[in-house]
Amino acid sequence: MAANAAGISNRPQGRAAVSWSPRVAKTRIRRLYESDARGLLDEELLDDIGTALYLRCRDILTIEEAKYGKVLCPRCDREGVRSICPRPGRARQGVIECGRCGWRIVWADYLRTFKRRQLNIGGAAAAFRRFVREWPREKSPREKMLLIDRLIHEFHYALNHPRYEAGQPTRAVCVNLIRGKLTDVVAFLDELTHGERAAPEMLAARDAWRENLHRAGAWHPKGGIP
Image 1 (cartoon, rainbow, N blue to C red):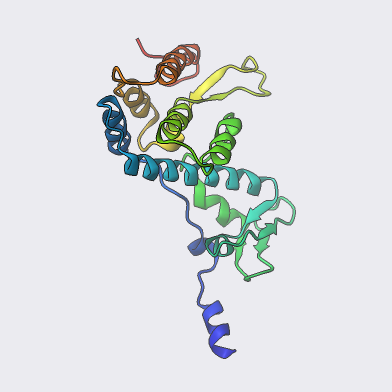
Image 2: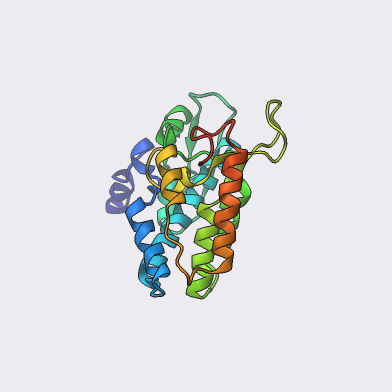
């Protein structure tokens, strides 16, 4: 019993227990698309990247739920248990505590764990939720590739904002998922290889992405591609 109690007490507390999935490197995305363009889709890389994107999207949704008062305990989550810790009020110094494992954190410290890490849901909730829902389902390699392609070509859209027309594309989702500055990731995405074997859906997604990038020109740092 004492050993068990000691084990629990040694588990990380506060910010030390919180970790978020990193964005995917551009080099890995490029390798995947080049393999697809050659007609030799790298299925191992496909699954690795898809899983990384799944975890990233899941983290974005987890943070969004936390903002609405439902904080997922990171320690229990790593054990495969979904334990939700209610956030008491909106005070930044309010303490969040897991009733199952005893993990505790001050809300202000929790906020700092994802500050400036491109983990805000913005106006792309539907895209993130769709990927989290669809990726775990059994699919062919081609279906998985299309799912990834659709996700990284998504946009944030204006919702209820006085300056923007409803449904206006405002920011490329790729920067939430792929490592780098927004302008660099947008340029990278536009240069991705689409070979003759590319599925029509992928070519259509690329064309729609370029059109949306132009539509977002007034708000987008790149101002659309030439």
